[in-house]
Every structure is written in C-alpha cells, then in structure tokens.
Length: 433
Image (tube, rainbow, N blue to C red; front, side, top):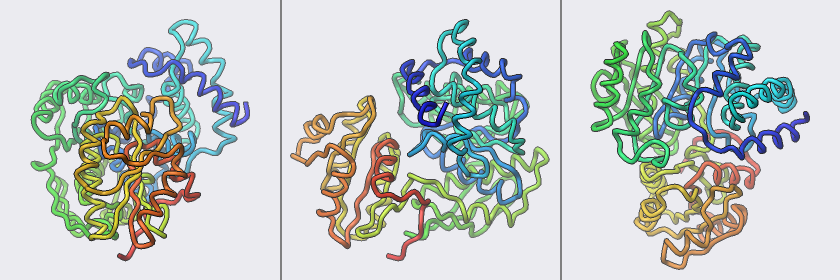
C-alpha cells in the first residue's frame, strides 16, 4: 500500500469504533511473536496530563542517551505521530510498509475474533515496529481508561496514573471511583506505581496497588512540588521524591499545572533508576528543560498570538482558560471552540461564558464533532459560528487585533486542524510579553 492507501485502510477499520477489551490485540500480537514482552519503560494513564508526562519522560530518557519508543494519542496532524523513536515520527513510507506487512495477519485474526479496530491495529503496529527498531525504553500513553485499553497488554515495570476527572463516562462510568477503577487496571505485579490522583479516586488506586502488593508514590505525600509560574517562559519547580530533592527545574510547557505533571515524570525517572536504568541528575534537568508537547498551550502564530490547547473536558478546560487569562494580562482574548458531541458540553460552555471573552464556534472535520449551530444555540448569546477552523481563526484574529490573544480549545481534533491551517507544526515556544 502507499501511504494514502494505508490511511484509507485504517479509515475502513475505524468503522468498528471503540471496542474495549484485549482479546483482539493479544491475538494480533501473538501472530507477531508477542513483541510487547520485549519492552521496559513507563505506561501512563489518567484523565488529563498523561501526554505531558509522557513527553517529559521521553525527553529525559532521550537526553540520557537511550533509544526511546513513544506512543502518544491521539495524533494532531498525521497518523505517523503515534509511532515515534526519539520523538521523531515514523516516515510515511515506513508506516505504509508496516501496515502492508501486517494486513494478512490482521485478516486472519479478524476471521477468528472479529475485525480489530483502528486503535488495536495502531497499537500492534507500533509495538512490532519498536521491536524491529531495537529501542531501549518505551513510553506509552494509554488511550481510553486502562483496564480494557489495548495498551494494557504492556507490562513495562512502571505505571503512572496522573489524575481522575469525569470524562468518557459512557465507557468508564459516571463516578470518579468507577473511572479510577478502570484506570487502576494498568497496575501490574512487581512494578512501581505513581499517581497524582486525589480523593475519592485516590483510595481506589491505593486499594488496587495493595492488591498487587506494589509500592505507590502519591503526589502531595511521597512526592511534593513547589512551583513558580514564569508566564510565557513556563514553570520553575522544586520537586521532592523518595529519591531526592531536585531544585529549580525549568519546565518550558505553559501553565502552572505542568509542575505537577513534571513531578510525576520525575518520580517516573526515579522509578526507572530503581529498576537499574542509569539517568543522571543533569540529564533529568536538561531533558525537562527541552521537553515539547505539541497542541498543549502551544503558540502557533504571533500576530496576534494564537494559542492552541486540546482541553477536551471541563477539568482540563478550566485550568487552561485560567492559564491563558493570566498570560493575557488584560489584553483582548478571543476563543475559538469546537468539541465532540459526546462531551460534557453544558459544563464546558459555562466555563466559556465565565470568561466574558468573545467566542467563535468552529466546525471540526470529524464524525463525532458537535455542530457549530448546536453549540451556538446552547451557548445562548448569539456567538458566531464558522464552517472551518480557518474561517474561525480569521474571525477571531480580526476581533482580537494585533495585540490580542486567540485561544483555540475544546478538542485535539480542532487543534490539529488549527495547526494545519496556521501552517506551523513546531513545539511550544517561549515568548516575551
């Protein structure tokens, strides 16, 4: 298959939607000789922040000289982003060749277990690719939940659960405790576990760790962090874990909450050290200082400033809006918003109203996306809508003026389209206000 044909093939698999469970993924991997058994590293679940933790871990481990496989989710612009070695996405030709080689095996498994989903194929393909590439360590972001997510075939030795908030309730449950139980399903025997969860979810994760008879490091208890927000320059943090105190760590990602994500990443590095991996304090410091995580409070344009963030649930949107308002320092702020129709739209729209900032609602080119007209009707203040993110950005730029800020939020799919529209795919950049 060509790259374009491989994408069409994946799109055809996408019609099978979300099918939780490990049966098909295990069958696919068994056909390949179970490459998942080759890897050590860190598996990261949670409602928000898991991608940032993964990005920081990958940066530190690469700084330490290791060949690092990285499986972020979802992609922003290209499917190739989901399979990375040393933070470089797989080449399009290699992606197409990979799927071509797996297709006969996929057909055999489909005949016996039913057709695998797009996500199951991508998980299997990534692990097969990393086995052939001979990576040293793997950093994997869990997709949906944990217990029944395809990535839970991995036993990497270290697990992180960032936090628990209400999201994907139709699949994971309608309470924090139920969602925590699903995410705690990634904990494995003889591993080391870390969490940023708070009560009441924390008790569920503590119980799961006790059942597995494994240590659990908790943010705010065994792990502490003190941080200063440096505005457009990111965050300066002092982090203490059982492994020591790390003073004045520079984190370039925007938002004070990134200090907590950094604390979980540092604890993850300490856990890998405890398992025999050599990572110096200097490598830890430099890796954090060079961490990049596209699509999360990322600057994609500067006249006016355009910030994008994949905040796709109320908890994430609340903290991102507060961060951007702080960065604006009274400058005009205009919001471009689009979201999936299965999200908690009333809560997210209420957060937008509370900012008193003008909002433009954008169409997203994805089948699960909410219609802009429906968002306008729910918002209730006659906000404009746009049939594309390019049109929405044009309207927002005009309203913000040269000295204002345009903030694009609500969905990672919207962020990906905004990045394409802006013709810029670089990571977060410091800016002098």
